[in-house]
Structure formats: structure tokens, C-alpha cells
Image (cartoon, rainbow, N blue to C red; front, side, top):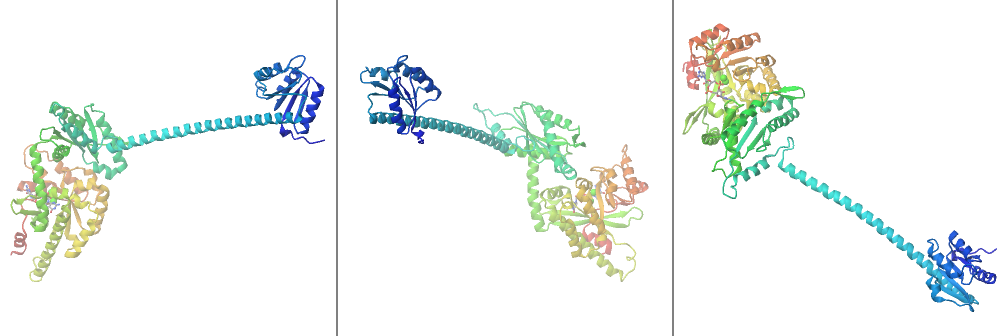
Length: 616
Ligand code: C2E
Ligand code: CA
Ligand code: CA
């Protein structure tokens, strides 16, 4: 058996003449074609559809169905339509070539066969068919690739679109961030400035918009941050913003400047009442406590209001004046509103001058310290002195510490200034003590009396200064003063507002036996209940309470309560501003033992005291 090379192609022979079939079969088989043969058209169609060959040799003259018809039918069926058909005809038969090509034949061969010709034509057409098929599959492949590429491109396009959308979103987000505060999502300072710029510009008709700018600042917000932490502080700010926002109309825009400061731009505004009513309403709404983490927090706000005016050209001027008015509201007791006036501005300018002068005064040593005796009511013996700073201004003369200490605090100048006072007082007292000891060796009458201590005022700024203890230790070491002779006076608010750090400092003071006085007691928080938690040695009852003594209709319950509480906590009491005998008698009768005031001594200069102590 010969192994046939079927790869050369399958050929179907359709011919009713057995001789032809035999001859062609043998010739083609020999060449390696796989040959099937059938003897009529019907069988030919069946064979072709059942297993489509690569080529058909089709006899034209057959009894039942001639070759033309077979070819026509083959061409009509999908599975056989593409099979090349070569017609076979005898010489004597009439071959209608036009018809043969018309029904779809590709070629024809006439009998008797020239073997070479048959093979050549068969091979040609098989090659052609192969090429066609290859072309078709290449086409298909190409189409498939195009389809794939198109799909890929579509995918890419979609990703690209998504990227574009995302980028746009990021851009929008960045835009938003640039103009908004991330915590409250309110417009920020930049946006406020832009809006102000817009309202300051006159419209097409040359008219300017009437507006009001409200500057809101939370009162004592720092206390919340310091005692409850920044997280609670942040949540409180959000809650405050929400509460305010809920009360505003579209003509009123709330913005956050930063920290605990907000502004509201009201535009247009037709009457001042529109802004002041809003201020009142907002302040009223603050009376309800905020609930943060189940904790109730009370928060009030101080508000400054400025109205549009022709002289405003720059947003920062409007903001500055609103700020000034807010500042005024704070100074007048917080939780209220003030409308900006030009005199406020003058005041600010004056303060500014004072600030410059203050810096110069430190360099030029325009300060001095006076000491006011604190006496025991029982025998008016001087037990202590309070150091009080004095400023002799070269042009303006004497300036009260009540006027410049707040500025020194604000500007931070209080730190070097306070240190100077402390050093000055320690030095002075050490010098006096040494002088007294020298004298004591000569006369014995001074030895028995305890040497008076010196009480130095410490501002809040100094109290919260990180290296406070270090500075105090340093000054004590430098001057050689016994720490037991030093007392420090701080206000209630310093302790209350910085309660955590205050405790630590107070304990460090205690360790050095430096005594601590609470100054101006009763004017701040009056939180008597806090008192027992802190190691306090002395309470100084504020002058304003002592003042009331002896006046008609004054309620003195509070003084009585303070004295009783202090006694129960073993805290000594110094009454400030004792001006009359009656003050002294009354206070003494309550159990208050010490006093300071014009009744005994005014603050005294160094020579005055030396006269008193050493009879100079
Ligand atoms: P303060 O600590 O309450 O000081 C007492 C003030 O009351 C002093 O005013 C004193 O002169 C005044 N005074 C004393 N006795 C009487 C009196 O009988 N009647 C009246 N009406 N007043 C009396 P001064 O010296 O003007 O000081 C004012 C405030 O300035 C002080 O109040 C204190 O808070 C601050 N201060 C003064 N010196 C210093 C200082 O060296 N450092 C700091 N941080 N603050 C100071
Ligand atoms: Ca004081
Ligand atoms: Ca005082």
C-alpha cells in the first residue's frame, strides 16, 4: 500500500463513464491526490456537501442531471460554493464555454485527456484555491486584528476619558482647597479677600455696593484646646460654624479666617440694623451649650462690625477695621459686638506708637520699680512689698502700667521686661537684706523682725513661657536671694486657662518654697471651687470688692464667702486697695489679716523705702 500524500488535496470526480473515472482516478492518485468518484450528479452533490473536496472534476454529459445543473447547485450551497469546478467534456460533445463559466466553472478539460494538461490544470486551480483560502484567512486574521485593535483603542479611550475626568475632579478639588478651609469647608481668607475686592469695586454705573463685614472671634477658645485637646477644639469649631451658618441668609456669607476667627460678609446691607441684629441673634444662639463627645461646652463670641465707606479701597483695610472693632468688643468684656469707629482706629495707632516706644524704653532704661508695702492689720507691721513697675516716658511723662502692660503682653515684650523686674526686685531685696544684717550686728532691734518678702507680678505670657522655672532659678542664683523671700502674683485666668501646665509650674514653685498669690481674685472666673486643687498660698481680694465696703446697698456676701473659703483652705488673704479705716476694720472683723493700700502706703520709690527702713 502506498501512503498517499493527502495534503496535495481532495478531488471529487463526477462522471457517468467508468472508463473516464478509472483513468482520472489512477492518474491523480498517482500524483498524490486523494480521489473520490461518483457516477452521477445526485451522488456528486451529496458527496460534495458531506465532505467538501478541494476541487471537483465534473462531466457535462450525464443522463439524469447534466454538469451545468450540478455546478449551479453546488454554487448555491454555502459549504460547496467556493469549491473550484473544472468541467470535463468529450471532443464530440458540444461544450458551451459561456454556459460553463456562467454557472460558476473555473476551467474545462476535453477528452481524450492529455494527462499533463489535466494535472497542470488541477494543480493550478488547487493552488489558486489555496491562495484564495490563504488570502481569505489572512483577511479574516486582519479583520480580527483590526477588531481587536479597535477594542483595545476603545478601552484605551475609556481609560483616557476616565483619567481626564479624574484630573478634572482633582483640579476642581485643588481649586476648592485653595479657596476653602478644610476643617469647616467654609470659604477661607483668600476667598474673603477676593470677595471684598469685588464689593469694593464700583459697578458699571459707578455705584458701589453697601456691605458690612463682621469679624467674629470665639472667647477663651484656647481654654478648650488646652484642657480638652485640639480634636475637641476642632469639632467645636465645626459645630460653631454650623450653628452660625444655619442662621444666615444667602446675602450673608460665613468664612473662616483661621483659628477661632470667622467673618461674615453681609451684602447688600441697607441699614446698620441688619448687621447688628444678626450679631445679637448669633450671640444669643451661643447661649445654648455645644455638645461634643457628650460634654457640654459653653462658648461665646465677640464681634466687630465695619460698614462700607467711600474711603475703603483695599480689602485688608476693611478686615483690619473689623478686627479692631472686634478687639474693642473683647476689651469691653467679650460676648458683645462693637461697630468700628474712627476713634478706635486712632486708639490703635496710639497703641502702635506705644509699642514702638516700649521697645525703645527697655533699651533706654526708662523703667523703674516701686514697692508698695503690704501690712498686717493687727499692728501695721510691713510683712511684704509688691513690686510695681513705673515708666517715665521722655515726652509723655508717667504712663500707667495698666496702659502699657497689656501691650507688652500682646507683643511679647513682657518676657524681657518681666525678667528685668524680677531681677531688679531680687537684687534690691538681697541688697537691703545684707544691709540690714550688717546693721543688726550693731543694733539688736531689727534682728527679731522677719525680713519682708517681695511680691512680683507675673503676667500670663510669662507664666506660660516654657523656660520660666529655669529663668527664676537663674535670677535667684545670680542675686543670691533666698527663694522663701520671693512671692509671685498671677491672675486667676492664668491658672484657669492653662490649668494643666499651671499645676506643674505651681508644684515646681512649691518645691522651691516660692509662695504664690492669686491676684485680683474675684474679677475673673470666681471659680472658688477650683481653688483647693492648686497649691495657692495667698489670695489678693481685688480692689473693686474692697471699694464696696462702707457704701450703701452694697452686697458684701462675696467678700465674706471668699474670706471664709480661704480660711478653710488655709490660704492667707491680702485685701487690695484698702483706703479707709473702715475698710480695715471691716476686713479684719471678717478674719482677713493683711492689706495693701493708700491707707498704709502708696507704692514707694527706693529712696523712700530706704528712709523708712534705714532712716536714711
Ligand atoms: P495690681 O497687681 O492689682 O497692682 C495693684 C495696683 O493697685 C497698683 O496699680 C497699685 O498702685 C494700686 N493700688 C495700691 N493701693 C491702692 C489703693 O489703695 N487704691 C487704689 N485706687 N489703687 C491702689 P499700678 O501700679 O498702676 O498697677 C496696675 C496693674 O499693672 C497692676 O495691678 C498689675 O496688674 C500691673 N503691673 C504693675 N506692675 C507690674 C509688673 O511689674 N509686672 C506685671 N506683669 N504687671 C504689673
Ligand atoms: Ca499684683
Ligand atoms: Ca491686684
